Every structure is written in C-alpha cells, then in structure tokens.
Length: 226
Image 1: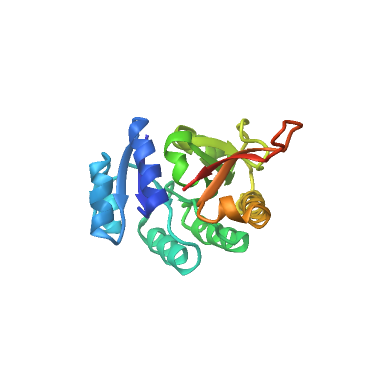
Image 2: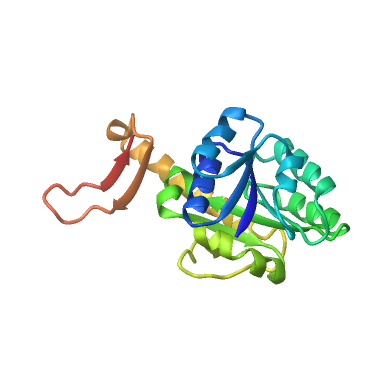
C-alpha cells in the first residue's frame, strides 16, 4: 500500500520505518530537513512540501498526520484539505479532542475527502512490537485503509481488545479509549513511582509487572527500562 506520512518525530519515524519494513511505499514530510533525511535512510521517499507529498501519491490518496495535537494538527489538516481531492483520506494519529475530529470530518466531507481519527499507542517500542490503534471512521474508508494499519498494529475500539480487529463507525469515537489507555498507563506509572521511589528514581518506564507472591522475598517484580 502507498501512504503519505506527515510528522517524523521519534514515534512518527518509527511508524514510517515499520511500514517500509512491511513492504509499504511511504512518502514522508516534516518541516525538519534532518527528520526527512532520517526517513529517507529508513527507506521512505522524502519530500520538502505538502504539495510534493500529494503529487507523489497515486489516487485515492491516504495521508497519515502524526504531529502534536492542537494548532499543529489543525493547521496540517486544513492545509491538506485544501490540496487533496475527492476520494482521498486524512488519518489523524494524534490525541485530538473528539469535537475537533467531528468538526474536521464534516468540513472535509463537503469536499468528499474522508477523515479518520486513529488514536495511536505504542511509544518507542512500537517499532518492534507494533502499535495499538483505536479507530473512528466509516466502515468503507476503514476497509480501504486497513492493509496499512494492520501492518503497524491492530484496529481496535477499546484498550481491552488489543487482540481483536474491530472498527468504530463514528468519527471521533477513537478518542475515549485512547484517553483511557493513556490515563491508566499514567496512573500505574505514578503509583509505582510513589510506592517504590528508590528503584524507580532513575527509571524511564516499567513493564511486565507482577504482584507480590508468597515467595521469601515477597517483592513486586517489574522490568525497569532506563
């Protein structure tokens, strides 16, 4: 599958790398020339403008936006909406307020440009393990785009359905499970840091935690990264 990708930060670049490894053709853009160069080194085709990105894609186009939420996402989606054509699609992978998703989908719909919100989790480990995607969009456009995200991860509509492949039909609906997912992860991280300040002091993250057992040490077992 062919896809345009806007936003080549640490997570965005890893997503591009994973897509290229999966055999997909990626046309990549970022305001930073250095970031574009890193994407090219990973196997993507780098471009210096959004217009060049659109010209480098065959129709119907699909463009993934992976930039910070708020004004960066708003301006990027607006700019893409002005140059995309009917039948093309924009996928927002950021943490967007669902009200904005609904509004953008309605505005783009007037041009018959599809809009999909796809809250993405996985962090820097997503390159190897894949990403969890919570997707909001019409079944038709999701079916067309599915070969690309499945390479990256699994479509899902709740934090508890990582192993399933379900699609949500309403634009904006990916935001709630995304917020729950990140909120629960943050609460767990905060609780561990509060309860175990010494071993956690210099740790960047924790995974694979198991509760205390009846063993002589009776200790919480975790994998500490960093």
